[in-house]
Length: 194
Image (cartoon, rainbow, N blue to C red; front, side, top):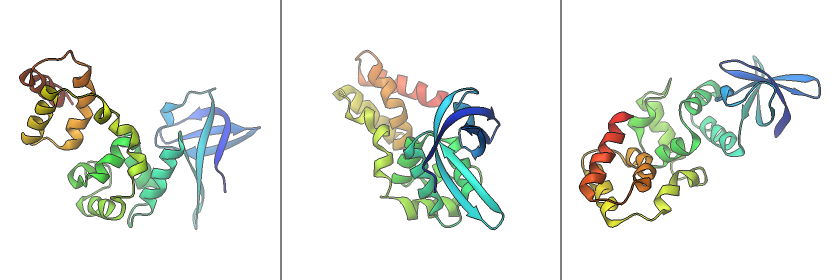
């Protein structure tokens, strides 16, 4: 029914914000309430869910976040609270990429997601989230030197997942050009830090 609310954030709590729209305060559950500031004018993308127990509003900073939330809701066994918890723990690009890569083990680290649910998420959504991964692949399109490419392949051979290696690739690209050995050392340092 609602696409978005545009108003002032008047209250921020750990799991929701209150958006004042022309004198009416809407309680909106959000995966990232602290991304807002009290007194801030904001556009919050809304999904209204009607259940026997009541009507609940869920709000997101972007249309992509709202779209990913709806995709998660389409998975058997994932309700609004579980979907919010998953989205609160990870940015949309990384989450979508993990699902596209079929990383079941990675998905089990989210609250309330066991191996069975993680497998169901991958089964239901793999191949359907390409539009949500667009920002996560910025680094892949950047110029990668042969030395850095060799280092990235070596890190994968050491057992790190593609997602873990992709996460540190931008930092390695930003480094001054060096040898594959030096890239590997810097990459391992970054991976061990996280």
